[in-house]
Structures are given as C-alpha cells and as structure tokens.
Length: 441
Image (tube, rainbow, N blue to C red):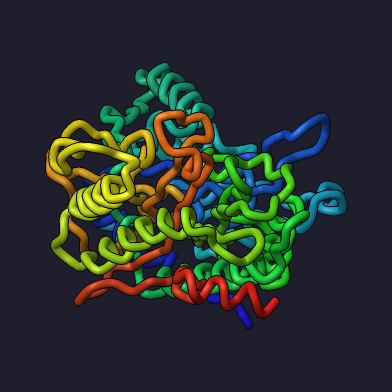
C-alpha cells in the first residue's frame, strides 16, 4: 500500500499558524539536524529535526528556516546546502536554493555557506528573535556570533534584536494536537507496527534468539516502506522483560518464558509504539496468566476513560489502583489498598507512568501540566497507554513462581470528540487470541 504523506498545503498552514502567535517585527530560527558520525568516516542514518520538518517538510541536513513577521506580512526563507555535482556523486541529489523555492515554497533561499552574513542582514531592525533555547548548541553559538557582529555595527545604523524568546513552547503546543492528516500518518504507523508484532508472535519458538525475533519485526517494517524503527526495539525474553529499556536483544528465548516486545515503525516521521508480551512456547503458565490479567484489566479500564475533558493524571491513578489491587489479591502485596497506594508500595513492580504523548517523537512534545494542573485531554491528542508489572528475578520477598515475570501491554490511542480510537488494535492482546494465533504458526 502507498504510505500517506503530509501535503504541501499543511506545511504552509503550520507556518501561518505559528506566525499568528508571534510578536510583530519578529523572526524565528529553526535549524535542521546535522549528520552525526557513527565511527571513523561512517555516519548514522540521517533523521531530520522534528521541529524543522514539521514546519518545512525539507529532508536534508545542514539547513535552517528563517521566518520573518514584519509590517503585517510573513516571509519564509530557507538556507540549505548548495548544489554540488561532485558531492552529489557521493551523497545524492540536493535541492539547492532553487529547489527550496520551487519545491518547498520558500520566498527566498540561499546557500548555508552564506548564513551568517545573510542572517545579520535579515535580523537588522527586528525586535524579537525566537529560537529553541537549550536544544541546539550550534544554533545558540550562531545567534551569539550574529548578534555580537550586529551590535558591533551600531554606529553604522544596524539594530540587533533586543528580545530573545524561547520558541519551544509555541511549537510544542502546536504539535501536541494532531491534524487529520497527521492522525492518518499515525494510523498507518500503527497498522504496520501491529502487523509486525503479529508476525513476531507467529514466528516465535523456543531456541530462537531475541535478535532473530527483532529481525522479523524489522523485516516487516522495511517491506512496508519503513526503513528505520521509531526507536530501538526491545525484545526481552524471560527476566530481560523486567528491564524497561532492554535493547541488547542478544539472549536465547527459552521454553516456558515470556518475551516482551516493544517496537514501532516510523511513517513519514510519525511514530508507532506498541508493546506486547507473550509466551515463547505459545502457552501462558498459570502464574504468567494471573499477572497478565491484571495488566490487561488496567489497560482496558484506562482506555475506556479516555475522552475530552479527562485530566491526564486520572488514567494514571486508575492504573495504579487496579495494579495494586491485583497484586494484593495475589498476595504479592499485603495490607489495606488505600494505604498501599499512599505508600507507593506498587513502585517496585510498576515503576513507570501509564504513558506519554506520541507523534513525530516517540516521547512527543507537550506539557502534561498547565498552570500547575494536570492537562485535560482534547480531540487530536495521541498518547500511549502502557501499564506494566515487572517482578525482579532477585526479589526474594515474593514467591519464586512470580520472579522474573515482566509484562507490559501498550497501545496508541487518539482522543476523539466523543471518546478515543485505538490505532494499534490489530495486534491481539487477549490471552486466548494470542494463544490461538501462535498455535496456527
């Protein structure tokens, strides 16, 4: 299937919406990502800066967006790598300034080699300068050099910006609520990611290595147009499932163990993020089933609560109560429910929060509190819902039958006008469905 894309008009609309929020006589600077060395003369695969791509759709390194709002009009200027036939033989075609104007709608475009000179000219007389402070060291150094040069030319009539304003909050708030086009991108990421998890369940068998199961997932991503995952995939068999960010993926998958897979693809810079936990041999043991049922009950209850107007923290509290109650009923915790919750007795078993915003970054931008209060959900927000229980293999305070069981269940959920929509529903999470699927393989 053809993957969805963000239209040219949506990038135009985003820049216009940002400009509406700016002071008059102001400028915005957003840098592109730069190539990063992996080792020697080998570079990591290039991945564009999310803020830069969100506003431009321009997918080359060593570029910079300048947005000017003056006298009631807005100008969009791109600085990018120049065309260079010799370099293009080695590294591929470049848009160059002409392509930046013709294909990406820039009002003006220049070589990145002319950045410092041109930037000083454009900023002359601008009162407010917006950029993401603390996010790009090289950009801060650039701004510092340009402003220092401009201030040194005061006697020539040059006027440097007087106000430096952090741009992050404005862009974070814009990106937090997704458009219909963005949701379709994330729906595609969710569908491809879900199918990859199904493939992993069908392929899994005792004696495989964790990396072989990861390879099944990566193969499905690549075959559907997603060369890179949205984050390093987690494939943790047995006790490795109790390590939240386990990425070695190098151990054997043993008969009788569970395997926890946390993996998602990226479609056009939009992330999928799914976790499923299932038995290596296709059948849950009784102890595994009991812990799994608690986690699944918590996830179901939290998803049912998601709708506009619900505070972010409400689902967290729901997950804590259900998980604590479940551990109490199994005898893993002892005491009164409310006291256990107040004492955070669940923390050794459920140490992370319920979820996070999801979008162009897997842990996406956006505040969780506003003016000291937990943020209320609105249509267009996308979040993960991922409760878990992890019982350390070294926890001698619990019955040995529980030790080394790590379970997390995660789905991607978009808030709608009336409730929510689970974007990753296509991968099973009911015990009977998982066992039936694995039995067919």
